[in-house]
Image (cartoon, rainbow, N blue to C red; front, side, top):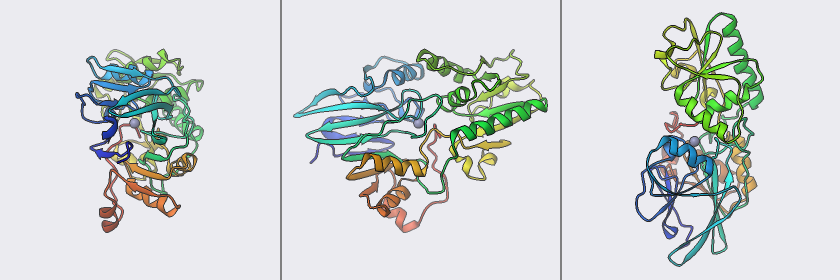
Length: 348
Ligand SMILES: [Zn+2]
């Protein structure tokens, strides 16, 4: 069996011959090593031994207590490990999803495997630029793996968000932007630097934003949202699941906008009970997923997360050898595409 043979288990990928996990969702306390692609909640757990970028290590320590053996790898610097009779290397490349998000290039016996974790090709205001490389086998995320998901340019989405905030402030109301605490919030806060807008950000977002600053990121002026903070004249940023009612009780009329790639679905703003929805995403859209595969030139592709079976079919239609490892292709072919949205979307 090839040392790159892998299996999928509840959000993680396992390479048994190398005793290596890629984004194991359950804490791994045994002898195995775990590559952690980035610090979103669905990609981290209290593992014994991790391989990750310095920024992901810093973000992960702020989210999960306890001591771990960490191999912090700089971009593009291969690290060699030995497992049984296999001598193999792992190289981290920027994924462009959130600060520190990495893809892993694994090389053994003259064969290579690229695992993307979550990624986007579009340059983002608060993430490194994604660096695809060629590989024999590609394991790619496919959150937005249907042709309908084509995101507008980031600059035009940011201009729309800015206009929404201005209009709301002009009406003497408070704009509330709903975005995940890691990644999306910093993307909008950096993207609207220089707009003249000032921000009040939820404490959860504040903690992570300070870590971005440790790594050299700059932002629009902001203060931490607190019970005694006046939000008058500020744009509030909150995680969507919180909405910060206790901070906003005295804020007067609010207008909420959710920031997510799912904003391309007309029902999105109703699902989030928001007044508006803007398609600011930290994932690749459908054209970028295809473009990414073309740049990697793999002989075999495995898809996971989101519309994995749909995207594998699109790749087969384009002449690639591809299969889904997180959705059952056969079941999918029998039942047809599902109408519901994937539930996994800590970054979206
Ligand atoms: Zn993510």
